[in-house]
Length: 91
Image 1 (tube, rainbow, N blue to C red):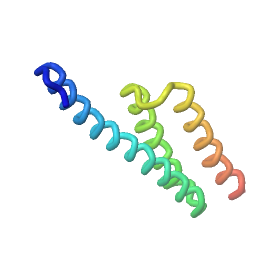
Image 2 (cartoon, one colour):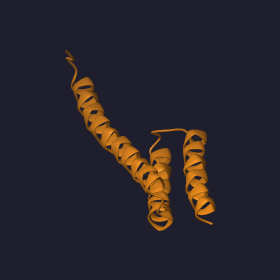
Image 3 (cartoon, rainbow, N blue to C red):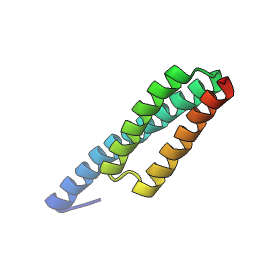
């Protein structure tokens, strides 16, 4: 166990940040799942809305340094591609 005041404070800060980051990661995963379920249902309007929200959450994760920019771009790109395929299949 830590004996110094500064070390104890650092541990408290780490615990707080860990909880915040877990919450953010969970939100990102939830928004991605919403897009995937909308795509599976075949509803392009709700998939489009969910995609915009998911992209926003993913980019917030990038700014919070939860994931790298290229990883986020890849995820967003694959989601866009799946939403686009719904529209193509409808026509």
